[in-house]
Image (cartoon, rainbow, N blue to C red; front, side, top):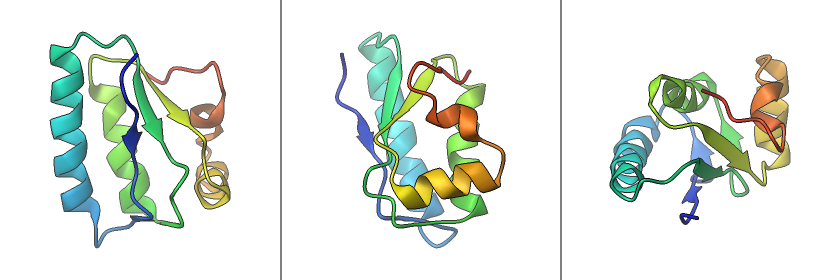
Length: 95
């Protein structure tokens, strides 16, 4: 199993480009390793907005299923508010 991608504390419009670049590089690396499921840790997320959620929603368009690990309370609340609670299901693999 691969090492999870650690989402930053700030998942907002101000950090979206930097986070996107790091996330895309990590996804490419995982693709080369033939990882079955992309694991994304949301444990450190302390601030998130629509841009941060859109960044993760883009993963749905990729070839790999993915899973959120250890969502912070802030991350969980944002997903709930936007109707994305399926991202928080332990066995769910959005794709």
